[in-house]
Image (cartoon, rainbow over all chains, first blue to last red; front, side, top):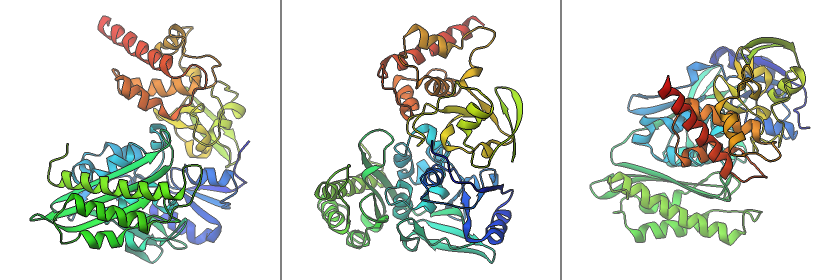
Length: 291
Length: 159
């Protein structure tokens, strides 16, 4: 029987209350959101918090809204709500691409965007989605808020910019014209982790790619930000040749390990192909020409 | 700690450790053994119950998280000796063999039909994709859910 080791439980009734509790209880306290990553880790004793601060009741963190030229998503927004959001579907369709293949519909009723990002599992889809979409996250602590770009968010495996006594409260997606985005994932069976996945976003301006975001899941120790491929695309008109070149960079710049999901060369190949597909679909969407 | 919730319409209040998982609270503390405890890793779906009307995997939810919430288990489907149409569908279409996945499958199906009374086969297959059946395959389960949907559509028409 898998049961977590004993811990003390308290339920936060506000974000400030949760941060106060983190400060009061110290480093052995953890925030629990949907719990679908943390509780399995606690069962396996890979995580052993002495205190859990439950933020599931914080309705103030469950929202998807348009504000100041951004789409803002509260940390407690569940996967099922990300999948249902018309606002996200309109501006960032890569979210729905990813959400249809993240775990299964029952798990998606509990798991949250904040929990997924803070778990920072390299195989997790939303970290790549948010990186490609050039999201910023709001991190709140006792001394106030700071805003961190996804490029500075992943510090290592399961390590993020969220520090001691802090919690992630919001994800912000700047809305810019000419946008198209897509997420491509290959998994062994429904609901499994990715063998590899690629997220892409492009912003077109007068026939050229003004900006691009590309990130990979499951092919390295952390989410891979494909900076070199982004630089390659920027300022050029989109083309199949360009996407193929970006795919070659993806295959070269990832660092997969061999496991039950496949050998290294297969995963590199997959990363390249999925990057190419994600860019092709992103561009078609930006041009409203999706097949 | 004291944990209070509504289970199958009845208010319950019990002492339990904070680490108690909902599946064990339901089965061991409340003695409702209809909910099955399977893989313990949120993969198999045998432990699905409804929390505030939404299906959740009770092996990966703390009982403490459900304090003040409403839980519905497979025991609530039958009332006064009359089977829920989902149960009847499983019976008619022979949608179980060993029966281990059945409570999770039926609760997932109940939630699906509550939200979407006329699901396509694809929608049914997506909805139950978090449940694993190792006996019948999924064909009869899908058929049973379709049977229940049709049955309920007929009942609505007659009403």
